[in-house]
Image 1 (cartoon, protein in one colour):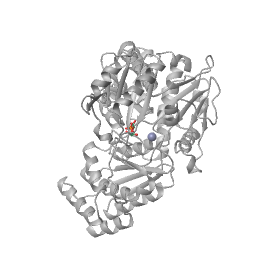
Image 2 (cartoon, rainbow, N blue to C red):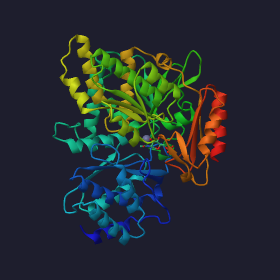
Image 3 (cartoon, rainbow, N blue to C red):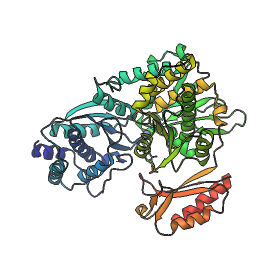
Image 4 (cartoon, protein in one colour):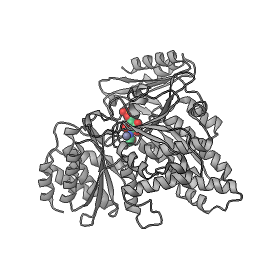
Amino acid sequence: MDRNAIIEASKKHDIVPGKPYKYGTAGFRMAADLLEGVTFRVGLLSALRTRKLGGQAIGVMVTASHNPAKDNGVKIVDPMGDMLEQEWEVFATDLVNCSSHEVLADTFFKLADQLKVDLSSSGKVIAGRDTRPSGITLVQALSDACAATNTAYVDYKILTTPQLHYLTRCVNTEGLPSSYGETSEAGYYKKLNSAFERAMRGKRISGSVTVDCANGVGGPKLNELLKIVDPSKTGIDCKVVNDDVLKPEILNLDCGADFVKTRQRAPPNPKPQPGDRWCSLDGDADRLIYYWVDPDTSSFFMFDGDRIATLAASFIADLFRAAGLEGELRIGVVQTAYANGASTKYIEKHLQLPVVCTPTGVKHLHHAACNFDIGVYFEANGHGTVLFSPDAMQLFAKKAPQSPAQKDALETLQALGELINQTVGDAISDMLMVEVILAHKGWGLKDWAMTYQDLPNRLVRVEVGDKDLFQTTDAERKLSHPAGAQDEIDQTVKKYTNARSFARASGTENACRVYAEAATRSEADDLANKVALIVK
Ligand code: 16G
Ligand code: ZN
């Protein structure tokens, strides 16, 4: 590999100095005009990573998800479609913060040496980006980094984040027994549509579902999928709104999953009518929130990640019983500290399933979900999926059914395993999963809403001088630093009924977040404010 080629290419994509950059929970994410050099350097790291992994393709996704249109971001996807191994985040951070082109080249070769990467071997990177116009310059920087390091490069252009994860796994399993699907966008739609029809098993979906696509990449991609969906087979009636990607400035503006979750209300435009079933995706289509205006009470009701997790877990547990698999495989649910206490109680007490709590960030949940045969994981913000282990999938295929009911359950489980994206949370695939489950259960949103009652809760963002002072233990449920803060929080929480509260440093902004829940709305608000004062 040619040191000069790296230096010359780097000069075309200079870094904006003076910023310490850090590979965080969502990769590098910031104002798009700071990202060109960062993305070039992410390309260099990917060139090392693919070679370290024997030439398996590495994915690079350029997106800033639910952030405003002016932002962008870049993150690395490992060969099986999961997030970059955590140990390598530090190497990414090191490369990106190099002070000159020469230091960058030196660090690159030093890392190669330290990690025992054979630079003469071949490597491959595949890329995707959301609809942000700034993405075009960024993938150019990535492409130049690949060229400078003789790394094969394929640009899949505009994709949802989960599609890029899907393609990464496909390209690395092509022709193998573990093949994940055809390595193309069309292959993704084909797989989803076929699994959806099989999972429905002749059931009919009642009523329509309106999908708010945040004016992001999910809109055109969902429309692509719908071109091959045959509504006569399942009754699906999907109305796509907020799918305008020609005006970049309206991306995530007053719509999308993040808007709905944080404002706890529907997008103002278009406005859902009472009784209508709605859902929202975020800007890169990896988060999903359902909601409706209850026609009986006229109040807005949200089905967030916790609700989707409980729905999926309860359905899969039922299928297990119907398939005669009880006791043979372990189903578990993974949540974060943000999960509503009522959902956790429902899963443990009512569904009788184990719950594991991990720190915030998809990689932590994903990792913990792999410890179950079937691991259901969702963040309350709507990011999540259900992981089926290879053993579980094999058992569904091989087990000889003892009755037509068992056969039915086994085939439904198999189809679900293919419908639900196994690499990462996927709003489009999750949406189809929810529609399948509601149809099987014969449920409307009222039935889903009645499964349990959320504890009133409040999330507050607290500006702090240095968020890094706030360190947590116990999956972010307790502060270990600053000393004494947790005691104060504990004393405060004690004064409220059914209460729980925690504070943690944000992984994406320079701020602390305080979450509180309690028996009543006013208690939850009050508790959140008191804990915010402790943190300030
Ligand atoms: C990132 C995470 C998301 C998490 C959020 C928390 C991924 C792909 N994304 O966006 O899962 O909920 O950070 O943000 O892991 P916070 O640390 O600012 O609260
Ligand atoms: Zn997202």
